[in-house]
Amino acid sequence: MSSGNLRVQKISGHAGPVAGEGTQRQEQVCKLIDTTTCIGCKACEVACMEWNDLPFGETVFDNTYQTMPETRWNYWNLIKFNEHPREDGSMQWLMRKDQCMHCADPGCLAACPADNAIVQYQNGIVDFQQEYCIGCQYCVTGCPFNIPKFNPQTKKMFKCTLCTDRVSQGLEPACIKACPTGCLHFGTKDDMKELAGARAQQLREHSGYANAGVYDPVGVGGTSVIYVLHDITNPEAYGGLPSDPRVPWAVRIWKQPLKWLGNLAMIGGLIGVTMHYLRFGPKKVKDDE
Amino acid sequence: MNDPILRYTLVERVMHWIAAVAFCYVLATGLAFYSPHLYWIATLLGGAPTSRFWHPWLGVVFAATLFWMLKAWLGDMRITPADRKWGDSMQHYIRNEDENLPPIDRFNIGQKYFFWGMLWAGIVLLLSGAVLWFPELIPWSLRGLRFAAVLLHVSSALITIGLFIIHVYMGTAVVRGGFTSIIRGEVSPAWARTHHRLWFQRVTGK
Ligand code: HEM
Ligand code: SF4
Ligand code: SF4
Image (tube, rainbow over all chains, first blue to last red; front, top):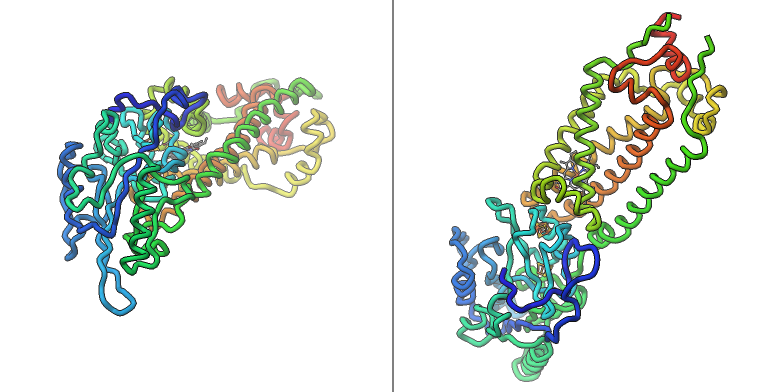
C-alpha cells in the first residue's frame, strides 16, 4: 500500500538496522470503536470496500445479519453480530467491527520470513507490502486475531491497512467517515485512550454497565485499534475477541531460541568437522594382502 | 586380482543424486526462510516467491527418494549385533584407529544411523511440511497444528542438517574413495577390505 510520508520502525524478516526507526516525530495513531453505540449498519464495511476498491465477493446468508463468518482477503472490515443472553433471560446485541488491530507488538510481523513484506510505521500502523510477500502464510500463524487472509490467485496476503494512504495525507480512515452514529473515532493513541476511558466511566456510572471498560490488550503491547466494551470481562462474547491475546509462544520459541540454537549447532557442526580433519585427517587404506 | 568392485549400481547412484540435489535445494531455500541473514539465498535462487513455490515440491521429491532408498537398501540397513559391537568401539573409528575395529558389512552403524535418521526426520518434514504448504486449509480452531508444524519442521530440518554435515564430511574428506564410489560406482579391493571387510568377502567370495 502507499505509505506516503510515513517512515518504517519495524520490518519483517530483516537483518540489520531499520532505516526509519526514530527518524520522525510521529504520534501513534489510533481508531476507537465504541461497541455500545454501534447499530450494525455496515456503513463502515461499504466504505472500506469503496475506498480500497476491493472486488466484490459472495456474501454468505446463514439466517443472521452476519455478512460472512470472518474477514477475507478482499473484505477487511466486518461487523460481527452476536446475540448475547442477559442474566434476566432477555437478549442483547453485541456488535463489533472486526479488522486488523494494528498491534504494537505484531505477531504477524514476528512470524514473517520475507524482508519488507510486513512493516510497522512510526505512527503504529502495521501494513503488508504485497510485492515482497511470498505467500507462506506464517503471518496467520503469528496473528492472535485471525486477520491476514490469503488471496489464492496472487498468493499474497491482504488485510486492513488502517487506510495508510489516507492517514499519511492527514485524513482519517474511510470507515470513520462513514459511521452514522459516531461510534468510530480516530486520533492519537493518547487522545483515544482518554476518550475511551471517559466513555467507559460514563457507561459504568450512568448506564448500568458495571463492567464497561476499554480493550487495549497489553499482551501484544497495546493496539492501535481499541474498543469500548459493555463487559470488559467477557470479550469472547463479541465474536471471539481474545481476552488475553499474545504472540503465540510457539512463534516466540520458533523465532528466538530455536533460531539461535540452530545457528549455533550448524556453525558448531562445521567447526567440529573442520577440527576433526585438522586433528585426524583422512583414513588410510591398508593394502594388507 | 585388483579389479575394481562394484559398490553402487547405476540405479543406486541415480537414486542417491536425486536425493542429494533435492535435499540441497530444499536446504538452501529452507535456510533462506529460516534466517533473515540467509534470505539472500532465495534471491540467488530466483527470488523468494519462486523458492517458496519449489521448496515443497523438491521436498516431496526428496521424501520420495527416501522411500525408494528404503525399498532398495532395507536389507543392507538393518542394524545387526555385529554393528552394535562395532558401534561400541566407535571412538577408534573417530580417531582413525581402524585396526582396532571388528570387520563390518556393506554399511557401518554410523551410515545406518544416518539413513534411519534421515528417513524418520524426512517423514516428519513431509507431514509438517504439508501443513506449512496448505495452511489455508486448516481452520482457525485447529491452529495448534500450525504451531506444531513449524516447530517440528524446523527441529527436524536441523537434525537432517547435522546428519548431512557429518555425511558429506565423512564421504568426501575422511573416507577417501567414498565420493568416487557414489559417482562411478566402483571401489578398489583394498578400499573394500579396509572399510567393509565382511562385504568384501561376501561379494568376492574371498
Ligand atoms: C518433505 C517435504 C517437505 C515439504 C512439503 C516442505 C514444505 C515446507 C514449507 C511449505 C515451508 C514454508 C516456507 C517455504 O515454503 O519455504 C517450509 C519451510 C522450511 N523447510 Fe521445508 N519442506 C519439506 C522438506 C524439508 C527438508 C528436507 C528440509 C531440510 C533441510 C526443510 C527445511 C525447511 C526449513 C529450514 C524451512 C524454514 C523454516 C522457518 O521458516 O523457520 N524442509 N517447508
Ligand atoms: S504470507 Fe504473511 S508471513 Fe508470509 S511473506 Fe507474506 S506477509 Fe510475510
Ligand atoms: S491484528 Fe494480526 S495482522 Fe493485525 S497487526 Fe496484530 S498480529 Fe498483525
